[in-house]
Image (cartoon, rainbow, N blue to C red; front, side, top):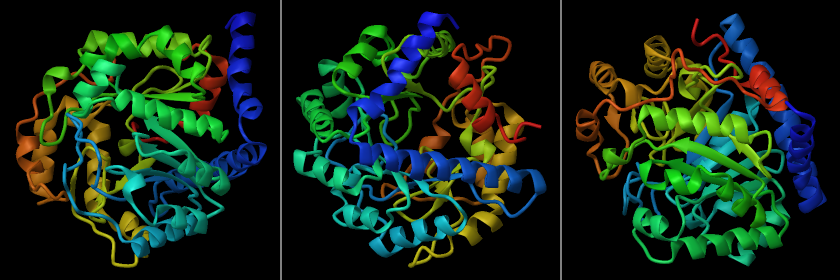
Length: 405
């Protein structure tokens, strides 16, 4: 890593303390930084000593309701399932008892959940990453997030004007999303952007120009995902080829040295070996139906929370379904079992008589039709991290926890 790259990395890191509200920066450092570090250590100890299982982080989809209808999305368009406020509050409280204080809040569109801000305010000791399309993120909502201080909006941008309209199923989505970004910038929030990379948006979003565009709009970090064609309209033809996944990995590793914002991924460790957060046990998902799921796109489950959301720890500790799926996924490869071996996944789900957790009720047929697609397990072509800081962080926080033997 050259001296110039060190300077650029430091400059990108300093954007948050220089551009964001000091109170928000303190909340981020304490609620997310220190608490997550301690939580990771507890998780490592549980894994190493064979103690009762509980994931390091829990992702929570609070509602199926959404104001958009994006192709390839796993959420049921028009679905009515939602966690009750009592369940959501109970989940967060139960996770805190296990030492977990960081949550991803997903939908649908979570800003359509009326009680959300009240519940986030109730848990001031936690930190929340709010996954949103930002078309409803007004200046008033941004001001509320600033008052809360414990939320970072992670804003989904799936392409520029033309691609956003095509992917989202509405007009002027890109413009409306940028208005949400700008409201967050005015409120001096810590702002993230997310992008699910498929063939249709690859050239637009996997480019230095896009990174500089986002930084110019006030975005502090960009989280790249690999497009997983699921849902009622999966559009498998938009899934990446192996060469494109290699290109994406190489781009991320190289651009971390010079990008004007932080680049995030959860697919590869410090050596470039593939990772699956579900197989690692690092993260699992709770659906709007209250189902404990392996990951958000895989909407089949055996375990469901109670009306109070108070049995989360017990379910995670006793779930033979999730334990078996973790073992199966880790033994198959280090990549994504949904993309790389859907037939093996189907056999497992069938043997366990797993239930569809959605409103649309067609997930089983969707999985049966799923073809084999390229995944991110790049055996023999691994690309290690170039950035020393990110390599250190991955080595200490995302190295597998023994999941791959």
